[in-house]
Each structure stands twice: as structure tokens, then as C-alpha cells.
Amino acid sequence: MSLMQARRLTRRFGGLTAVDSVSLDLALDEIHALIGTNGAGKSTLVNMLSGELPASSGQVLLEGTDITRWPQPRRARAGLGRSYQRTTLFPAFTVFENCRLAAQASRPRSWVLWESAAACGHAGAIAGQALEAAGLADVAGRQAGTLSHGAKRQLEIALCLATQPRVLLLDEPLAGMGAEETERMLQLLRTLKRARAVLLVEHDMDAVFRIADRITVMANGAVIASGTPEEVRGNREVRVAYLGEGDAC
Amino acid sequence: MKDWLIPVLGAVLLALLPLMVEPYTQDLTVKMMVFAIFALSLELLVGMTGLVSLGHAAFFGIGAYVTVLASPEYDPGSVAMLLPMAVLAAAAYALIVGLLSLRTKGAYFIMVTLAFAQMAYFVFHDTRLGVSSDGIFLNVRPVQGSWLDLDDKRHLFYFVLACLVFTYSLLALVRRSRFGHALAGIRVNEQRMRAVGFHTFGYKLAAFTLAGALAGLAGFLLAAKDAAVNPALLSWHESSAVLLMITLGGLGHLRGAVLGTVVFTLLKEVFSTHSLVGPLADHWQLTLGVTVIAFVALLPHGLMGLPQRLRSRR
Image (cartoon, rainbow over all chains, first blue to last red; front, side):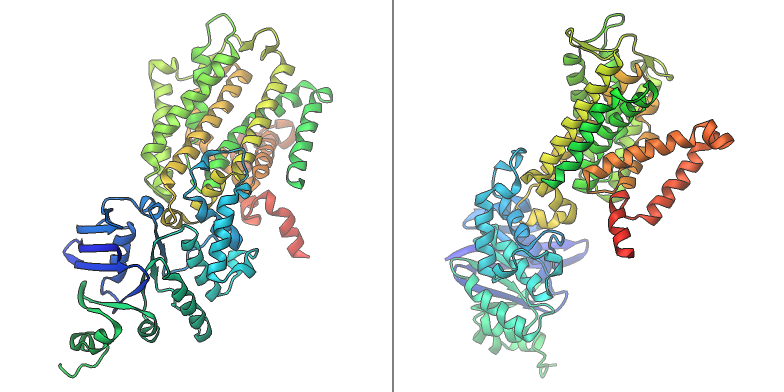
């Protein structure tokens, strides 16, 4: 079942076409990896899916609804979560407060001034679940800025989970991680796809081929291949353009 | 518990003050309390939301002007009518300015708020609405029934104190509420807040309008205290002075805003008194400016950061 679709999405910056008519399907219970060299248009595509960047043309569908013109906060509330390549947290808050703030976004009672934010049981419960799922329950009371790099990346994902998303867009969650941290994150990613669709933008090929259910390869703004890891591995065009086996040149 | 101990003690001490001091000091204290409300309203923007505005005096001045302009010529106006009018007028202008300026960020936001404030300044300075470029007198101070007469020094003192306690408590509530936490999130990382589903523009606009309304309250009190207004109240000098007050006190703390106001006002008072500093008193802007620069250079987190700085020295 397809949760999110991109239909012929295009983004032009002046004369440059950063993303050229890309179509993509994110299915339930699947990790869909998006790979490609630097400048292939992956981040631009993710930004269009998440609503940070308007599309020049094409459509974005979320569970069948056309959300192409929705601003980012509305998409987030509709169940679209994203994490960032650069760690973007609220460093002065505790780990728990980070998640509670994210969970609070979907609650309508933001304007009740006489109630303490700490008293919101609902947001607190969701935040607790998100931390549990991301494996951060032990450090819930720590200040986010003092965490290790790996734990910060986990918190980045916990922040997404606290918004209770159906679709997750993860932008290089493995960037800068050591071997042990990578293993822990891959373990986490496997649990995340249950009842969700995950788009994974990643440079670590080894990890991608181990964990992805589907892989889409981009080059120069366009999709050059899409399929299961085996299909992609065997694709001649991909080998030439990306995996560096340039015998055809 | 400990958090509100110092503010409560401060309020109690202030309440006892008129019994102990001579009229000059009482008058100066009223002035400080009015400016403390003004500074607190800006702290909501700068310290809590991360929006540095250089046009906040516009809302202060509008509150003051509305109070004088809406007062009857020879009879006392009613507090229950004039105060809401001043607050609503300031809030309305803040809503319009906020709608147009909050789409910009950083230095652009500073310039746009400055431009809107200067626009309001020139409306009162140069048009018939402002009556005269020298300002207007308020012939009779506002009253409420027979129990409140702002012409009575003691009534004025306690009324201003009550408004200060109200403003401080309101902002303390905002800080710990979900709304306040969202503002703190926007200050640190607005993009992330949008990504988790906050319509940040609405939050910023609400904060901007509330800050304008509270500045309007301070404006009402200043007009009632001075029984006069002039266009300089809306000028960028006033906007930057209040920005200096909260910076001096330390951004991010309500107490800092009040402390900064007290220190700034006292410094200004000292530096402009002939009997204390001699002929330098004619150039108080210079001495005050140098002192503020020294403060900010030595205490990057303002006076509120002083204890921690002393501790780390040891």
C-alpha cells in the first residue's frame, strides 16, 4: 500500500533543473532508500516532499490526498515527519522536553496560558513513547546539548516520532557515526518501518543495501534506476554513473 | 517555589516603599515601574521569542497618546475606559506591524520594525492628530469612581505597582505554558518547529501583539504619571533605550528586564545630576553610553549573569 507519492516532481532554480520530473512511491512497512552523488537532487526532493520548498511542477500525495500546496506545518500535522542532515535540536532543553515540545504541536490547547507545559499529560506520554522507541529513555533527563553525536542523531529521530508520523523522511541519519552507533541506528530503523513508510537518504552504501526494501538512484536531478537492492545492484547504468565501475567509458 | 520568592519579596518591599521615602524617590520609583512594564513587554519579544525589534516604543507612545487624546478636556477621564482604549490601540497597531514585519528575519526585521515606528512617530510629530510637535498636556489625570484617583501620588504608585505585578505574573505564566515553550522553541530553531507541525507565524504574531498591548499599558501609565505626552516617546531613541535596559539586565529572564530598567534609570539619573557629576551632567548620553558599553563588554549575559561569572572566577 502506498502512503506517499511524488508525481513528476520538478524544481528549477533559475536555469538549473535540480529535480527533473521525479516520481516516487513510499509504501507501508517499507524502507525506501534514496541514493545518488552530491548534487544529484536528493535534498531538494526531500525538501519538496516535506514542504520546505515549493515544487515548480508536479504533485505530492499523502495517503491519497494532494498536499502539493500545503505548508510544512500542515503536512507535519497530517503525519509527515522529517529529520535533518545537520542535527537540529533545542540544546538547552532536556531530551524529554525536546520530545514533549514536538508532541505538543498537534495539541490544540497551546493557548491555555494558565496551564504549565509540564502538566500536559498527553504530550508527555507521547514523548515518553518516542524516547522509548528511539532507545533514549535512559537519558531523558539530560540536556540535549550534552549528548554524544550518536545519541543526538537518535534524538533527531525521536523528535520526528513524537509527532506520530505515518511517513518518515530521514536525511542522512547515519552521517558521522561510528560502527557501533551505526549498528544501533540500523536496528532502530528496522523497527521504525512497522506501520509506517520510511524514505532514507543515505551515503553509507553498505548500510543502504543491507536495510532498504527498495532503492531509488538519482543522478543529475533525475531517477536513473529504482527497484529492489538486487535489481539496482545489477543495473548497468547505476554501476556506470554511481557505483564507480566505469568500464563503459 | 524559589523562582517566585524574589519577585514576591520585591513586590512587598515596593508596596512598603511609600511609607518610608520622600516624594522624589517615590516619583522616581513610579517611573522605574512604568519602564519596567515597558521593558518586560519587550523581553517577551527579544528574550522569549528571539525577535529583536527596534520599534517597540511606537506601541508605548500610541498607548500614551491615546490616553491623552481620548481624555475629556476639563474633566477627569475614566480609567476603565481609557486604559483598555490605550491597550487595544497599541495592540491593533502591533497586529498590523506584526502581520507585515514577521515575514522578515534578523536585520531585516529590525529595519522593518524601526520603519513602522518612525512612521508612527511622524504621524504624531507632524500631523494634526498629534496636535503639536511639542506634545500635548493632559489637563486632568484619569480617575475611577471615587476609589481611584491617579492625581493622588499614592493612588498612582499603587496602581502602577498593581500593573507591574499583573504584567510580571502574566509573563511568568506565559513562560511556563505550552505557548511559552513553543516561543522558546521558535527562538532556538524555527525551522525545526515548523517541521514538527507548529504554525510558527501565528505564535510569533500572538507574541508580537501581546507585547504591543503591554507596551500600550505602560504608555497609559506614563501619560497618567506625567500628565503629558510628546512625540519623542515613539522615537527610536526610546526603542533603543528599552532594548538596552533588557540587555543590561540579561536577556531570557523576567527579573533581568526589571533589574536592567532599575540600573539604567538610576545610571541616567546619576549621570544627569549636576551636583553629582558637575558639568558632565550636560553630556549624560556620553557617560551613560560608555558605561553601558563597559557593562555589556564585561557581562555578556547581563547583570543576571553576574553571580555565575563571579563563581567561575573563583
